[in-house]
Image (cartoon, rainbow, N blue to C red):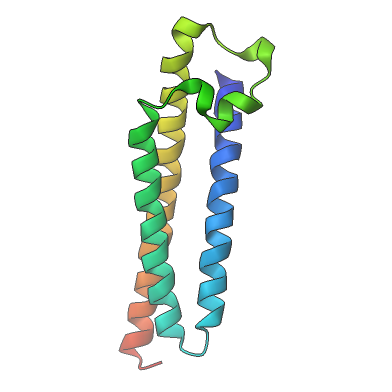
Length: 122
């Protein structure tokens, strides 16, 4: 189960890093106006958190053989078929929700920074 958690963490982390790269590029493109850049970053990060929450909900019913985590899991560490659906859906759901919580905190931080910029007229 620990190996499943590690692989799930790595796959979700990689997807979040790609999303964060796109958000960062958008923010750099708007860097001429910092308040707007942080508002866009906060909004896009909140959208990413929403997608992660959706994926956590979807993980309960998604067939375990079609998940990226299952493909990276070595054959000798895969649980038996009757236990695999429960194990993979539980691990993926927990991982998605963990990343959604972190992403939400980052989104709130970006909105607070945008608010501070707005208050100071920057």
